Image (cartoon, rainbow, N blue to C red; front, top):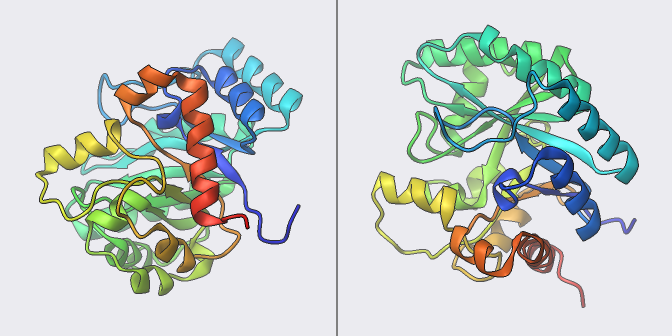
Length: 274
């Protein structure tokens, strides 16, 4: 492997119609090294992949990872709400350990800082016990709107073992986060980042930002996000989750070609070949 080549992961939203074993086989076909799986929905009734409580699906997924060599990088999604209970997350954490997953994607929705930090610290401890990190993703419409806010939560939690901060290119561009803010993050908290592109210079409502994040991102290089500046501020070998949902275009070109285009675009932007 060339010194600067980095792992790429096929995010759930880039192939969200596939069951976990199918996503792993598609990732292997296209040259991804990992997949991300959404085994808990981001809101009640939202789309997800199903494995928890389904031992046959778990067995087939483990067989696919062994057959292809593609691993599971991150599992979604744990939301730290004001009524957060760790017990509700344990089935996801336990299945993550069985899959050999590396990270749990975490969203901070609790506006009470002390409780948010305490629950995050508790989650980090259990994630670490199961061989994973708990990576707090800043999003401009949540209680953790930018990179500085994410670092404040991690520090308030005591910077526990297993803590992490996840930078998503879309939220980097649409929050108050700068490349200097990313550069200031302790590298031991950075375990992976997410890439996509989008138009810039827009004034969007929260609803419009959420819709774009879930349904209408652009391939890297098609929009105005300073992706090269963002990734230059992060470790050069940081794994990258390719998260590029665009429901209309995915339906037009098909899931295979869309996932192929997304990987090629991500590689060209981050690690351009001569």
